[in-house]
Length: 102
Image (tube, rainbow, N blue to C red; front, top):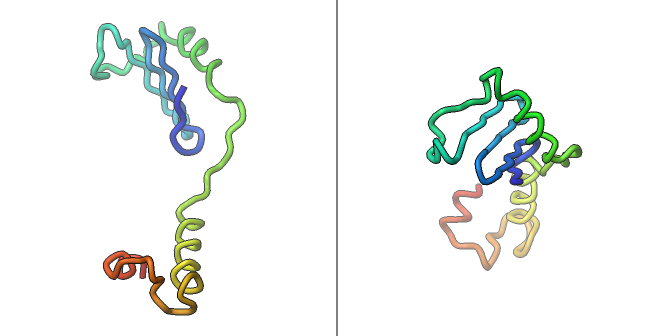
């Protein structure tokens, strides 16, 4: 089982790869017949019981990750308040990275 972001999970078995996204979209691939994942079987009626079995392996509780706003706020605080004080470039930060951060 793999999780990427909030409520985006993948379950793999020897034969199947099932992905369920936070917005409800699904992908299902037969890894033995379609190892490159070209044919999404999630929409096929005959896959519904298999999807239900694989879905049971996914977490029932999800924890939100800090979003980009949180990361931008921390970066701003580090640059403006952090190591060098207000407005000073932190000593450990390269000029190009400091320019990008502003």
